[in-house]
Image (tube, rainbow, N blue to C red; front, top):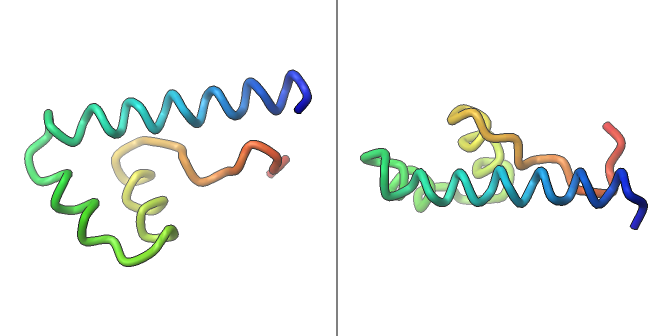
Length: 61
């Protein structure tokens, strides 16, 4: 893993941690997340909440 990939990975983990933290702070979020049927729905929902969790650490896009 390159230094750039490591930084990208750590940013994603940070976003995920913030998102998980918000589940108990914002009413309805836990239920909305539980209603997702696949990974793409989770990524889209997270994006609508302002979190960037879709890109994998090895992707350059």
